Amino acid sequence: MRRHFESLVIDSFFEKRSRSYCKVQRHMNTFYLVIRVIPRQENPHLNEVEGALVSCWVCSDDQVSALTLASFKVRQMHWEIVGLEESPIKVTEKDYFGNENALEHYKFAQAKGMSTFITGWSRDGKSSWGPVKLKNSNNFVLSDYLSKIGDLKRKGRCLHFEAGQRCTEPIDAHSIQKNGGLSLIAQNGKVYVASKNFTDTKQNKGGVSFAKQSVGKVSTFRGFCGKHDNELFEPIDNFALAPTQEQITLYAYRSLCREIFVKENSVTLFQNYSKNHRDNRANLGIYDAMLKGSQFALKNLNAHKEKYELLLRSKSFGNIRSVLFHSLQAPSVVFSGLLYPDHDFMGRKLQDLSDHTSDVDLITFSFARMSQGWCFLFAWHVDSTQTCVPLIRSLATVAHECGALANSLFRFAVSSCENLAMSPVWWESLTDEQRADVTRSANHGTNVFSPLKSDYLVSGLENIAEWEFDYVKSDLE
Image (cartoon, rainbow, N blue to C red; front, side):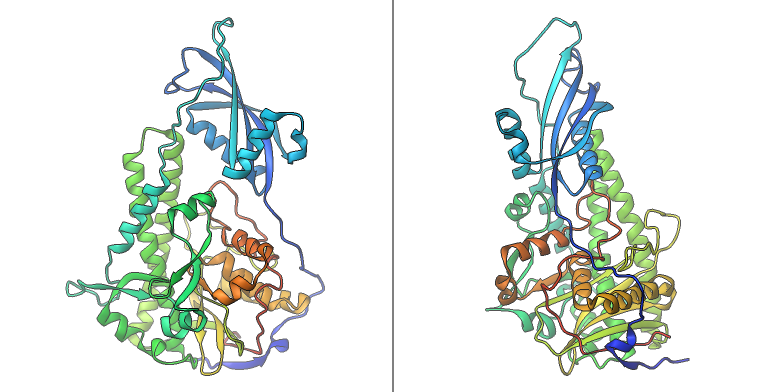
């Protein structure tokens, strides 16, 4: 049976709950720990050194991620870990007043993310050396990685379900509409986006930072030929969201295809790294893990793509579910993305993403221009209802309990989507602390050594976006 949209005022959509879920955001700390090690076969000091203690200063979110990162760095330098001599403890600069050597390591960690100091003992118990400069065995070169990502991005292919040999000229298609989204927030033709510049990435220790970029280059991917892109997405590129079920499906499908394009590139990249960088066991373990994760994600993305394409082929969209939140404000942030929801807005687990034996549910989300104003649009296939409906219900709950709908939606967009652009006028009006908070949230999930937080949608970024929503449309039962 065809479902019709039901208009509701915001308050009637929100369920009442007795508990409050308003909390504060955490900040990154510096941890100190000591690891006991012995040299591996490939360690250049194997014949001289029997064992060593590695003192580590690590900037990280918590003790677990600090230990994980330090352990990786130690293995990367060809040491085998035999024990934890001192567990991670939180330290500050004042803990090292009067100890210039340790203070230097602390400050280096603050600047670069981590510092290590190794104290070893000789095999014969007699020999001694002064400070020895250890060879850097890290064969991961950030500039090379970014260059390869760029090369793969330029190699386009048409992902349209009717693509064939004739689709030989992929174009730079916008996953966020240029005229219906990016142009609304641009200043002098530019917006703020996650920087792909080597210097910016290095300065932010490999994490996300934001820089100005021309709207002509923002959110583009070479995933469609001109013919198929123009024909397929004409109902959303040339018309405001009504919304119709077809339009909602197209917004979701575009987000899905962009993610497939990105994930295919990731699989290719990590296949090459796993094949050509086998001389360092620590690095290889990371490459193999990233490859397996990317392959699993791509498999599921393609399964969801097939479901959406059945709808587009048949022009029957009854299996699409959606919720949109409407605003009359001038937009400050535009976005297009998707998520395998793992936890809801109250920190409760929705599905286990570490279980690679099962299919996972998926939700898409997009900025969409409407005839008046704009909306935050969630959409999913009915097969993902088991996860997506509880996610939306939890949003309704925290919005009612905390009056935090705008905060929750902004937090969701920033922490879940790297395909996001911000108004220069809005971004530059923020305080340094607010911009730092947004950057920290954008880096959620980017550190492979840090466990994902169950409460990343619960708190943070309060009253930064200052969005206002006047009504919601939903086809939930």
